[in-house]
Structure formats: C-alpha cells, structure tokens
Amino acid sequence: MPDALDFEQPLLELETRIAALQADEDPVRVRDEIRRLEDRLDRLRQRTYAGLTAWQRTQLARHPKRPYTRDWCRLLFEDFLELHGDRRFGDDAAIVGGLARFEGRSVVVLGHQKGRDTREKIARNFGMPHPEGYRKAERLMDLAERFAKPVVTFIDTPGAYPGLGAEERGQAEAIARNLRRMAALRTPLVAVVTGEGGSGGALAIGMGNRVLMLEYAVYAVISPEGCAAILWGDAGKAPEAATVMKTTAPDLMRLGVIDDIVPEPVGGAHRDWDAAAAHLRDALRRHLDELTGRSGDTLVAERYEKFRRMGVVAEE
Image (cartoon, rainbow, N blue to C red):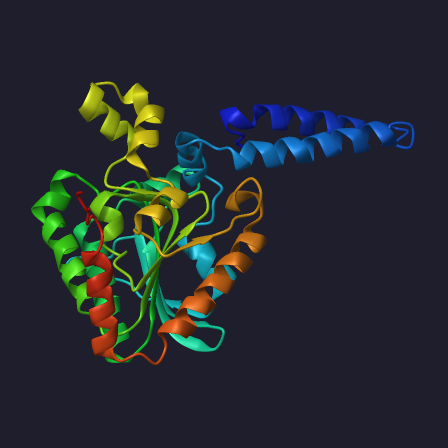
C-alpha cells in the first residue's frame, strides 16, 4: 500500500505477508494460508474504515494520490476544453476550469488543482489560489450564465493563498465577488467537496444549489492545525480540534451544510479512481436532473434560502 497512513499500518503488514506468500515458488502449498489472510484483511479493512476518527478522515482527504480536478474532468466529462486567465492580471494554475460535456449535457467545470510532484506542487501553489484564480472562476460562471450552462465545481484546497502579493491584488475582494456572483447565478450550480475544503478559499467556489461531499472529504472554516494553534497554542492538538470542529461529511450532513454524501471505495478514492468516479457520476446526474428546467428566479431563491438556513438555532 503506497503512502500508507499511520492507522493503515496493520493493513499494510497483512498485504505484505499476502504478497510474500503469493510469490512463493509453490503457491498451491500456501493457498489456504493466503485465503485465510485475505479474509482477515477484508474484515480488518471494513472495520478500520467504518470507524475512522475525524483526524483520520482529514488525513485521507489530504492523501496525495486522491483524484484532483483535472483527474475528475478526465474521468467524468467528455470534450473538456480548459480556459485560462482572468482577463485582468494573469492565469492562476491553482484553479482550472473550462467547457465540457457531461453525458451529452454542456456544462462549465472549474475547481482547485493541487500538484503531484514537487515541481507541479509549486506551479499549482499547493492548490491555494491567488485572486486571479477566483476572478477566472467568476469569469467562467459569467460564461455559464450567458449560455445557460450548469456549473460543476470541485473543492480541494487548504485555503486561499495568504501571501503579500495576493493581499495586494485583493484576495478578500475577489472571494467576496465570487460569493455575490454565485448568490445571483441564474443557472444550476453543483459544488463537490472532493478532498480538503478549507476556509473562504473553498467557499469561494462552493455556494451551490447542491453541495456534495465525498465520503472521506472534510470541509471547515480553518484547518485543524490552525484551530488548535489558536485555541490551545499547540498545532499538535490538531486531532482533538478535528473532532470538535465537526468537519466530516456525516457531521455536515446532520448540520444541513451539505446535501448529499457520495460514497467512496473502501480505503478512499485514491485506492480506486474509477469506482469513485462512478459513484460521483451517479450523484451528479441525479442532482443536475433535479435542477434542470428550473427558472433562474427559482434557482436564486432556493440558493438564498439554503444558505440562510445554516447556523440557525432554536432556544427553549
């Protein structure tokens, strides 16, 4: 198991033992032992991933082998044509987007893009967009509304880039403009949290008529490390912070922040991209079908009510 996380070590040990037995010169002799270990591995795998803590889910959401936006575009869409630039400053590689077809339906797709190797991580700024990235997203949403195309967004970022240049070019203003644009968008918008949804950098493309989350994704106003550093002055208490922050898909479903949880293969989307894409395809089809045909006024009103309901409490 490449890139195994700490809680996956018992699984890795079993997989290693099975692989060693399968390499035996006389596999028939060890066939029963292999079968016994495979049954044990299957039971342990089911038990491990059924009882993940919030911090373990955060680790899975950050796994370097999870599919990113360009991967989802290849797995889910046809004829993807990437569009570049915000027509004001430049092109931000931390957000990619363009035109595509989803099962014959024309859509606009956009999302955060992280990198795989060191060079790409630097080029993509570790998935942390600058203001020009959010302005590119705004431009694509304008295009979608002009031509009455649904918008699908993929959220996977630690947060918007907090550097000096980003602040000088209006990071907060760019995010605010996107929120205002999405609030008034007269075409369906489906947002999917595919990995790590962090802070306003995630919400800046996440104000959808439907907000979906992959099973092991997380979504929060701050990272667990940041929360722990603020509350306790110790980023090492991130696992404790992750628990109290309620960042997981089941937590957010109960709180009404998201609308649907998309199942992942056992072990996470990084273990089987095709199976993960099949589950997400089904969810996207269902929600886009539900939203298609609704008027612009209805879409705006429903989106408004959806977000106004969040955070409402009742006191006895």
